[in-house]
Image 1 (cartoon, rainbow, N blue to C red):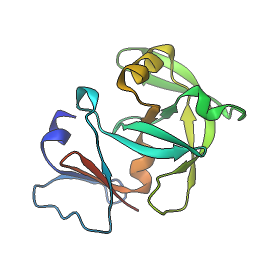
Image 2 (image 1 turned 30 degrees about the vertical axis):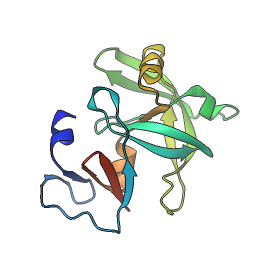
Image 3 (image 1 turned 180 degrees about the vertical axis):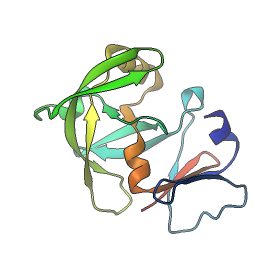
Image 4 (image 1 turned 180 degrees about the horizontal axis):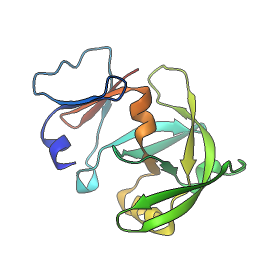
Length: 154
């Protein structure tokens, strides 16, 4: 996050590259997400999860996204998944299929979210966020971060 906050970066999983480039174009085709101040230099965006607005930390390395339990109330679990966090170690999480809307005029899509551990929930509370959105976002969008803004292009 130190590097990402210092210079413009483009993530393109489909074509298999990450580009650090001060001269990269940020066109009107991208939807901008202005970022407020975020703790520890983390990047956060607002999306809709199951028709509720959610502030999510963008995590470039998270294979599983996480959402606060209130966002999945009444949904049936789709099973347990294994994950790892450097400060927690290996753990399992209950997962749910959720409707996601990036709020940029695209069609909503479904993706799996896990329920955070107690340690992650405490961190979410301290950071005033509802969850983490991981690599699924990068699979669906070309993502650029520049000058405290996130830009998405399908």
